[in-house]
Image (tube, rainbow, N blue to C red; front, top):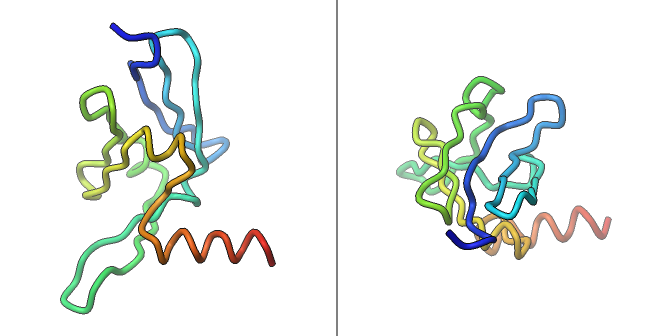
Length: 100
């Protein structure tokens, strides 16, 4: 097992963040509001707003991704660590909101 391998994930209702624990004992967390959660429709992608119960169902997908299977959402841990939370347009909107 690698030291930086993800071994657990959970959603913290108190902070509205997803927390990943690694083999070396470290943890990383990201506010869920940063993650682009969408569903695909005939008109393109539409944002979804999962509730705490739905977000609590997060699981590891292998040791390199987290997934909300029921919501159809998957995020690579490496992307999250590199501050990539969604598609280019989503990232641009996040950057614009930080600058404002």
